[in-house]
View 1 (cartoon, rainbow, N blue to C red):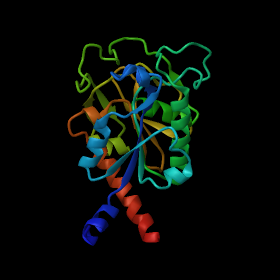
View 2: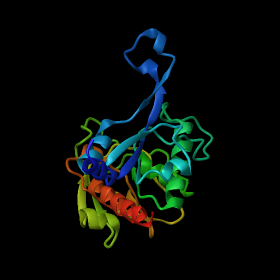
View 3: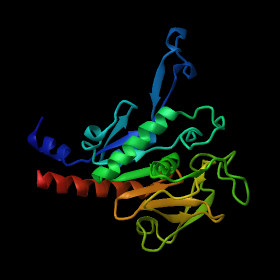
View 4: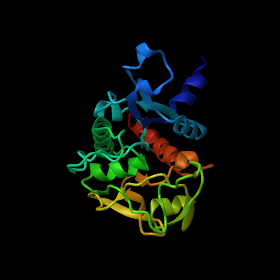
Length: 252
C-alpha cells in the first residue's frame, strides 16, 4: 500500500449513519435463524456519502457514547419507524408497530454527544424528529391529512410531492436557495421546537420541513435526500465534516 494512498484516505471524513434493528423473522432465511435480530441500514446513505468522498460507517445500537462520536467527523441520523410514544411521554400504544424505544435512546444519546463535541450532524425525516425530541421538543404524533398527505401513498420514494420554502440566510437556504421540491414519507412532524433549534423550512401547509441549531453545523430535514437525485445536502455535510477534520488534525 503506497504512502500516498494512505495519506489520501486519512483526509477522507468518517461519517456514521444510524439504522434500525429488527427480527430476522422478516427475512427469507432458515427457520433456525428467525429468532435472531439483524441491523438494517438503507444502502443509499452509504452510496451518497461515498460519492462525495466520505467514508461511511453504519452504527449499531452498541456504537454509543463520546468515545465513539469523537472518532467521527459527522453523523447522519437516518429515517425509519416512528418515535415511540413512550419516548414522547405519551401513554398510548404506537401507531407504528415497529417503533423501538431502543433506537430512540441510542439516537438521542448520539445526538447529544455530537452537539456537545461540535460534530456536524444531519437528521433525515425521523432523524429531524428525534433531534427535536433530544433537545426537549415535541412532535405531532399523527398528522391529519389536509391539502398535503405527507405519507405520499402510492408514490415512489423518489417522487417529489410538494415544495419547501427556506428561511433567507439559513444553512438550508444556502444549500437549496429560496425553494425546492421534495419527496415526503412521514406522518409525524415537529410541534414545539427543542432548545436552540430554529425552523428554517416549511411545506405549503405550514409543516416544519427543516430545522437548524444556531451556531452549529446541525441540520434536520423532513424529506429523504438519499432518495432524491443529486441532493446537495450531502456535499454540504461532507464539506463541513472535512473542514472540521482538517482543523482538528491541524491542532493535533
